[in-house]
Image (cartoon, rainbow, N blue to C red):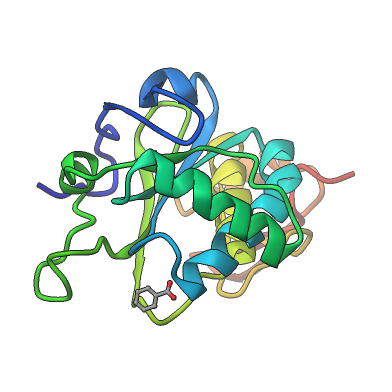
Length: 212
Ligand code: BEZ
């Protein structure tokens, strides 16, 4: 089975490097990121897990819980974490799910048999507080993910969740955003008191609403 945007993120209970976890309980009312890895003790994954550990305060600022997954068993994760901490000069401070039976991986479509039937692919799932899937990206095994991009998407998703705006190409936190087409011209002044620029009837920019 695989999942699509808007689906409820499948719930599961699994062992992890921090003990048994029920996924939905772990998420609580927070946003969440679940990211899968091909295997423990692999070089690209080692850098990725270190990078996420260093970014944990940024995820926390945004009320995002982080959890990784690989198909190796718990003891392997625990041994690997020591290597990650040593080589990446950090402390892995979030759980890694052990999925040796591929149960969770299959639930989330992390196994792409034509790429490999032994390893999971390098995927990221962002889940909203409503437990719905907001983003799915899959990378090749040889390309480490850009977790600053994941933070950028979270910033965009959280703006969209709170205001009637979307974010343009290559948008960065602090830059102008787009007023969604559903907002009528006559309602803009009340909804966006910071002002707006009208390029076309369907292309209207406003300063990022959650900044002073
Ligand atoms: C890695 O994480 O380094 C990796 C994993 C599987 C295939 C290639 C690279």
